[in-house]
Image (spheres, rainbow, N blue to C red):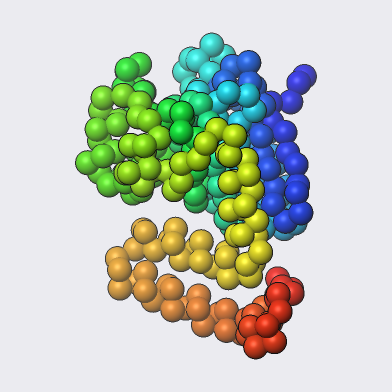
Length: 248
């Protein structure tokens, strides 16, 4: 059986390639299962500090493979990606539709090419997004913009997606991988425990009233003060040298 994903570690950055280019990386149960297995391994190994998710061929992902899974399947792979404690980045070219956009929404950051197309067309098929699209999109861009995309099923281009905050950056087609690499490398160079705690503060804070979210932020800050990396960060600043993180 041919694998439907490809993984490559480039130093402290992992690259997860969706690898069904002949189907615009439409997601089937095999692809979802392979992502779950990989993410479990990455979480256990603790070997990388940032992850890029990208599609092989002309598209990021056109969504659910309706030929193989007309009734759909649970989006466990999307939830595992969202729960990964390291910073994650979706690098989007071509289509990111339906489950493809939901996979990108599970990442912390999204960049896209000038010609990419994003959308949640499920209502056109008598469905709604079921891999977190209704919730993550509304939290990211607000309920009004999310409602328009979901209720109409109409796709949008990169310019409108960036204006709404759905894309962090828009780059030329040939600049997608270099831009993703530069951004992921920048994140991977930071203190790993601090990055994990920052992600926890952002994600959990969105689910809490502001006063409790601020308490969470304060608690995590205090925990960081006792780490070896905190001492190393101060020492590196004073000595004007790159820090040597110990992840401790």
